Length: 221
Image 1: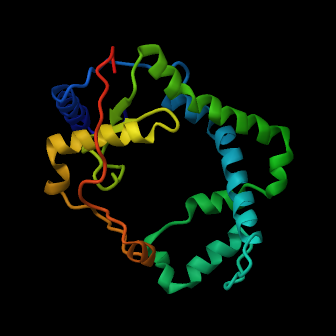
Image 2 (image 1 turned 135 degrees about the vertical axis):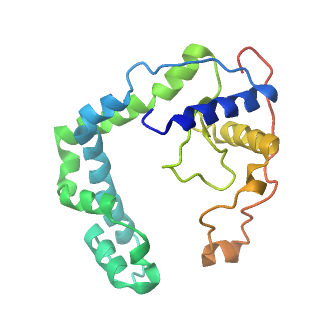
């Protein structure tokens, strides 16, 4: 797992919580192909299409703007502007992913056989979650969440819920049920709270009850 020993202990505690509120836990499940070593062995090929897409999508986004007040057109422009603009808080972030995307080449990469191979590999591996859930007739995959990963507001301590594509409501319901059983959100304050004008203008609620939980009682669900 590559984390501190106490992570497994806290994860087991979290599993006991979800069992106590009606979940049936089937474990330990193993992916068909995916392992951490798989990514290490295929990192360059898996990342290739991602970085090429980042570059292309940024340029496409700016090309569709009717008004471009800061004259930004490329990923290099975004990095330069962010580094030179104090209100963007450049000291709070690093640009590792963006720099890798810039250094990886230009958008012509998208037309190569290498790009297509990389592009097809990513969704193939991404389907590992659906394949694993189908094999065990389960709805949600629960995995350890450790301190190196900053959890979102309301996310369960030591546990992360993952579901099939477009099963957002089910995953949110599971996380919400876990939160109601533990009240972690009342015990711990989030490290970062959004304070942008977008949240203020739309009066977005970031705390409190916001989803109704439903739970299936069939089979392993």
